[in-house]
Length: 626
Ligand SMILES: [Zn+2]
Image (cartoon, rainbow, N blue to C red; front, side, top):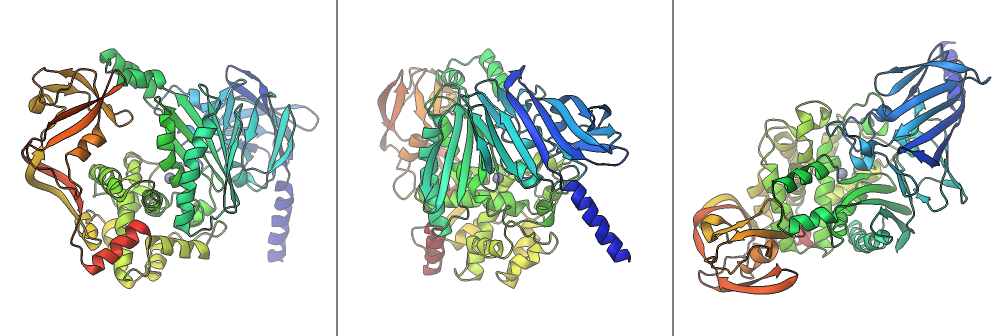
């Protein structure tokens, strides 16, 4: 009887909860950047009904509190009688009585306008409204849920201006000039599919069986989607090659917003930046969350343009990263993500897998796909990650930081997932190749486990590391004990040596004079600001041996390259080298002798020209995938 009773009550609550949540959001009458939302439902709660917005959503690893942007909330019963409403905390509205809730109305402010930088929602997870221009919608910001009832169906209708079209991977029910309707089978699906309303035309690319849509908004251009598409196309081709010619989704969308910072870019590049310039820069850029957020069939972007379409340069690496999230965590995650709790989430300790491995894959895909050369991958991408990784304490195990990421001090350690986490991913890859003699790689293990679980099935949080080790080799345990759950500094030198790359954290030797410094060359440059790879000379004494003048823009990559020969060694003292500076828009060649001094060489990485056969085999596997 007890069992039956339990079954009966589940069925009962199931039927009560299975009610469709019918929302209408009015984008046509957006005043003061506010959108009016109405919910029609037949919710039968208890004495009090709790209507809430998410405290966070998957992938952000931060407290968002969308409920902060909801105002003027009114609730009515099925007879049109107004009900009492009281806000509890940031995200929940208590409605009394809760037995018959038929309609809720409220206004939503966009989170992008938040003035407090500390509590601002990361833009790609937030909401941005601009009447008749664009609406950047993460549904958690507009649409709520009752109690913990995340399984109700959601029907969403947007009343929209005729010039805007909404792009999303949510199923579309209807599209007309003045409205567009979508449905989601539950709250998870709604949250997992952001929507971008834009006046720009969408673009699409077909990668084998996968249709990729690109939607974008940029106030300064009506063809930003086109420029984005070009980058996305080559990024997707590289991914396709990496995963072996079968992308895991039938359709995918890139939803992109570009913020216009060209004026600031000019100012920086003009070298005219004084103390007030910095103040302006800080005010404008401070607290802006450039980047992206991943979803199962799409990703949403917030990118800056400092001129010359610079947003597309950054976009391409980010796009590979976000797409690869389809594998981790979207197809390989613990129950804390699979059964996500929007009000009281529990964080998983496996950020090494969800973000570290993803970021490493993104770097490796660009290299293996030929988008970035092996040398550049090592010298630009990996080296900068290694340098940044040293700024995070080894005293906090990665898994501890991960599980407590909402709290201080761990929250400040989060950015290491892209630096130390990616290097950890690379070392794990190398260790897997070493232990299996190249039969397995990090990619093949992640794909193998991803097949076993997939989007709809979670692995057990506490057992996953054991399972991962079992899929490779018993000796892999030491790697996890030391570096993932332990406090041992990453053994970068040892790892690189396995694949024939020589890495030294520090060694004394001859270092080139810094042509952009007062001490070495009587030149003052603003090294802190690098725009499009270029540093601007602020002052240059006539006696400088390079021939630089104030206002010259020096390409730092070119400078680094001319100082080395093809094997990556520094050229001999006195060798004449040439760089090309941008002087008032004209490219001017400057030829000067290479000069050196005694100093400390930091983070030198070189491919060993005399690798052993074993090293060569793993190096090829790592760098080409074969
Ligand atoms: Zn990520």
